[in-house]
Image (cartoon, rainbow over all chains, first blue to last red; front, top):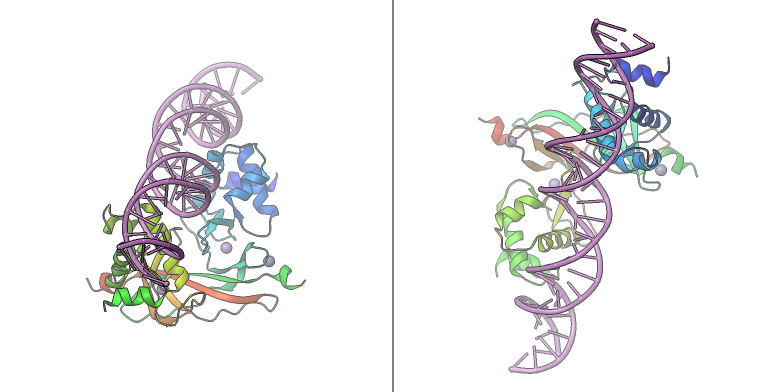
Length: 139
Length: 139
DNA sequence: AAATATTTGCAACGATGTTTCTTTTTTTTA
DNA sequence: TAAAAAAAAGAAACATCGTTGCAAATATTT
Ligand SMILES: [Mn+2]
Ligand SMILES: [Mn+2]
Ligand SMILES: [Zn+2]
Ligand SMILES: [Zn+2]
């Protein structure tokens, strides 16, 4: 069975044209995608609202995760394995390339521990690095 | 001279009612402020646009800095000393309290170094911690 | 006090995201 | 496979956020 369909079924999502297309976009893209990228790449096939709802349901199911960026636009990228409904475990660093503007998950770079004064409690650490991505750096 | 007026003059900003009020809000608040907080706290005294422009000019001058949060809302907080026009040096960690919802600059907690694979270049590291703030933790 | 420079308010606009409701599509059941 | 039930998509309306251009008001300089 098609791997895209497989992922959808595994997550109890009914298989629709829109979900197939959007999930396929994520699988074939190496960087993160913004809502606008998705609208563009799916042409005028789907309503904006459908895209919003699809992204939201993917996030809910742990198929994709959101990436906060300092310019305040949300990006989305595929989760690796361990995430599921109500369980996100994306403890990696994100890179926003200041040359090409793309955003990447650095899945192998684990979020550093942050030590706060003892009056505080740390629950989650989010790290976004601004820098130059691999492909921009090699040119 | 009033310290608020002093700061404005020092930054070559003309002293207006709006700027005085907004700067004074920052000086008297211990957490970070969102645009909405400012609109609320200044009553209906100023137009939305004026608030936007004031915040923008404060950021430009290095009086305040922006704080990215994972819920994609911008917060603003006072800079400490070293920042100036075109020179922001806010290398500290930010905490979003999951109990009270407030956002704080942890001025004494320096952004940890993040080591990326050598194909990448790091330019800036942004760390946002979700956790419990001092005052919420003491209750 | 007058002239100049800067800021403000207002109105209009675009982008983003949400909600409600009806129609269409998908899934389940028989 | 056909009918019934459930889920998703599309459309329209709406809310919020943030920006821009311009005329009126305010602050600064002369
Ligand atoms: Mn990621
Ligand atoms: Mn700060
Ligand atoms: Zn790049
Ligand atoms: Zn708190």
